[in-house]
Image 1 (tube, helix red, strand yellow):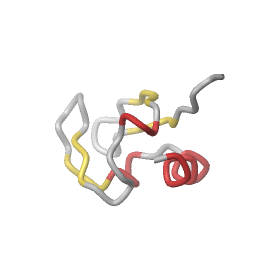
Image 2 (cartoon, one colour):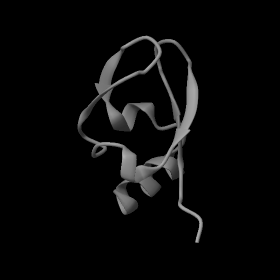
Image 3 (tube, helix red, strand yellow):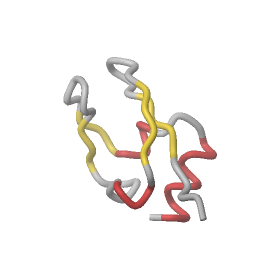
Length: 59
């Protein structure tokens, strides 16, 4: 069975990456970009609405 993943995009430095929902905090929690350390709600790092819905459903 494959694990789902979500795509993230930093709104500040535009770094993009993928992660599994289980390795991320909840969508409303503050999250720091691993590249530039920008702090925002995790939902603001989701690349698409589909990624946000996947995170909400699986985390």
